[in-house]
Image (tube, rainbow, N blue to C red; front, side, top):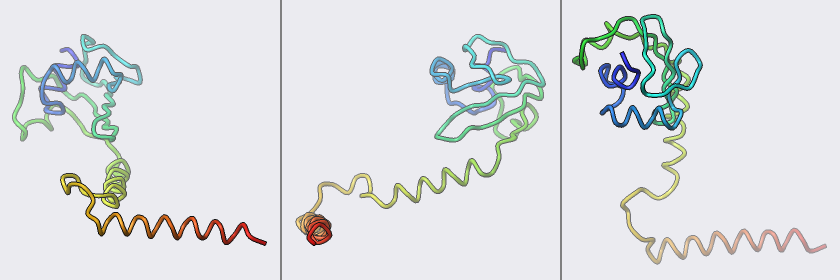
Length: 132
């Protein structure tokens, strides 16, 4: 079975077109090698898939005939992704929450004044450290 069809069948990627594009970008490796979408996979192959800044690691157990239900996915693959990969992604989400939320809109006058006060303090600190 083709790698793009396999990843679509076990519900890692939403469409085969997305799976093909991921192969072209080099986000999918089989047994450590970057592969084309037409590469066949066999039981026992180890797949590494980069998706949403996480490197998923899979082992092919069996090949499905077609797309399978979410409850049956574990019959065809074994997920060996380390928990640290998910923890680092969670830390990235916390880092992003520091910045303005998406969809909040333009900064208000109060936001602008706070930014100006902050930048003035930073420049004043730089000036104070330069004087003897």
